[in-house]
Amino acid sequence: MIILAPLVALLGMASPRLVLLATWLFTSRVAIAFHHGLFLPVLGLLFLPFTTLMFVLAYAPGSGVRGIGWLFVVLGFLVDLGSHGGGAKSAKNRHAGTDRIEDRRPSPNR
View 1 (cartoon, helix red, strand yellow):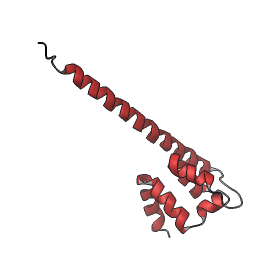
View 2 (view 1 turned 120 degrees about the vertical axis):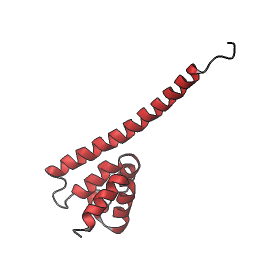
View 3 (view 1 turned 90 degrees about the vertical axis):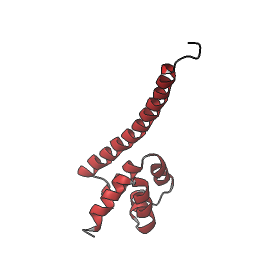
View 4 (view 1 turned 180 degrees about the horizontal axis):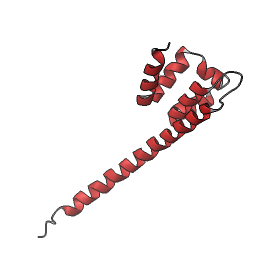
């Protein structure tokens, strides 16, 4: 298990939805963290995968998320915000870039 944990963490950085789904299917950690609910884990899987994954990993049965666990949940949330914001900014830059290219073309009237 000691060797597997860093591999799961690295895979989680690359594909948090895949790791969260595998954690949900092969362990009971998601069910325990969300008290056997279905709605919040599905929303987390779709919209905030890093936050949900960090919450599931930081959750301790009986005491919940405490101490440094909340730091990891907040970091997961910031990564999610960055990934959503970065995608929007990239799309905006692509759109703005195509407008600039069209503005540089010589007009056919010259």
